[in-house]
Image (cartoon, rainbow, N blue to C red; front, side):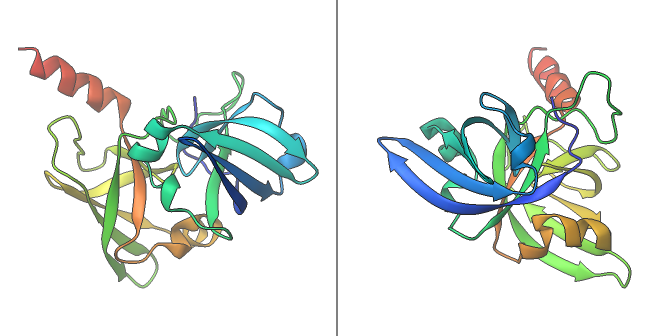
Length: 195
């Protein structure tokens, strides 16, 4: 389980395709703390570390992961948001994040609010994918609070610290991002559909 509080960024060093899988080699400032078989969130996608060599490590994405996320669009040199799993005795600073991306969305607009930035994202309308104002949403692994909520869009406000210390600084109108909707909201939507 993750909390959506990003620890650091990782740089994509190499991409290797093997049948329907893709092996991503990343470098990061926390590689020396990683272990093989450890789950690490990459832009909100839970991936398993399969190899470590110096300051580089490898994770593998299967076809289902590539279909559901924006990982297949990454290019060498891109930065991804990194978070290791929450320790059982750690603080819960964000919200419950599973690392299981529901869908992608596209950035439609960025507004400079002279102190923060409003990012507006649109996704394919789906009754299972809901947001609520002041509810939680995970964008590229970052735990955020929904400001505006619609049936196929939402907005979030980003403080300068988050902009500088995550890959939000690389998001532009037209960028695809990973979305994980709030798990509690997903269960409520499922229960409501059974009535």
